[in-house]
Length: 191
View 1 (tube, helix red, strand yellow):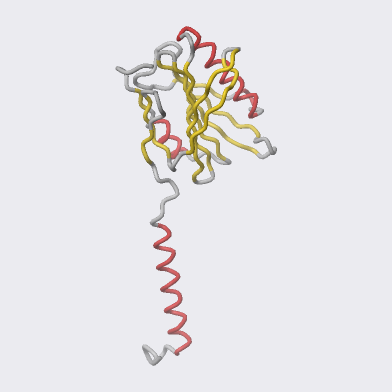
View 2 (cartoon, helix red, strand yellow; view 1 turned 60 degrees about the vertical axis):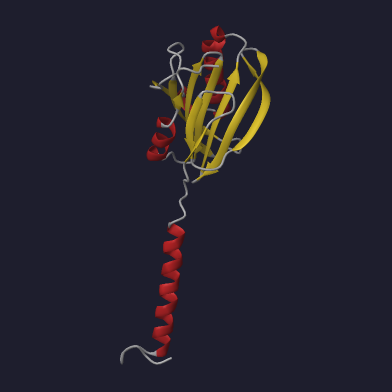
C-alpha cells in the first residue's frame, strides 16, 4: 500500500483505515436504540400503552382483596430497567379502592421502601374517578439486597384494576415520562 501523503507511512494508513472501520461500527450500533417503543394492549382490557421492548406475557393467581385473583402481566427489560403492566378483573367494582390500596402496600413492603414512597395524583383519561389514579415513587431493595428505584401507577376502570411499573437502578425521568404518559384507557369500553 502506498502512503496517502508524504507524511503518512503504511502503518499510519493502516491504523487510519482501522479507526475509520471502528468509527463506522460505533455509528451503526448507535442506530440500534435501547428503547424500541411500541404500543401494546393487554388482552381483554381497554388499556393501551407504550413499552420499550417486546413484552413477555404471564398469568398467575395472587391474593388481591383477600381472595385469589388471576393477574395478567406484560413485561420486559430494556436499558437496565424492568417495565411491566398487570391487570386483574374483580368480582365487584366496589372492591377496587381496597384492592388498589392493598396492592400498593404489598408492593412497597416487597421493596422494603424507605419512607413508604411518595404518592401523587395521575391524570389518566378513561380511568375511574374513584379510586383516583395515583403514581407512587419509591426507593428500596431488590430481593438480592441491591438498591432499586420504582415508579408505579395504580388505577381502575370498571371491575379491572391496573398497575403499570418501572423498576430501575437509577430512574431516567424522560423514560418514565414516556412510559406513564402513554397510558390510555378507552373510556367507552370499560370491562
